[in-house]
Image 1 (cartoon, rainbow, N blue to C red):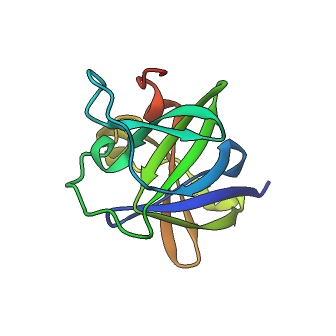
Image 2 (cartoon, rainbow, N blue to C red; image 1 turned 60 degrees about the vertical axis):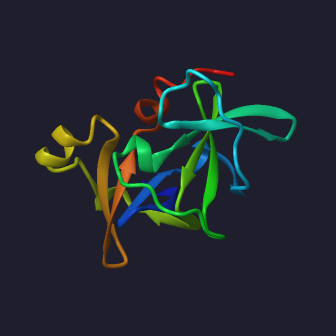
Amino acid sequence: MNALHVVFKVGDGDYALPADEVLQLESFEGATHVPGAPPYVTGIVQSRGRVVPVVDLRVRFQLPPAPRTLDTRIILVTVDGRVVGLLVDSAREVVTLPATEVAPPPRLVAERSDGFVRAVARTAGRLLMLIDTRNVIGGVPLP
């Protein structure tokens, strides 16, 4: 079965997450720091009248910091009734991934990714890493 995915970039990697988990994409205009939050929680933002914690995927994926650009986005996701923002370098694409193109990650990726990568997919001559949103936001405290 084919499934829609939102594709985003963090560092040199192309990642995807199921479109049914995505509420919306927003430009990043900054976040309010939360004292005592884990280092990967860049802060909180307000979206549609709701306060939302934002996870910086560069920090979460242990990548070096990079300057924010006009392409920097927050992907608002909902998982298990929680709404969390994912801060990414860019996100502008939705793709349909046939189930035949999705496979478990190679062993090294599975072992080294802290459970963040649940599968890989080939599409249009590139590889996408499908993230496990639950694992990525698992420890994020609610505001």
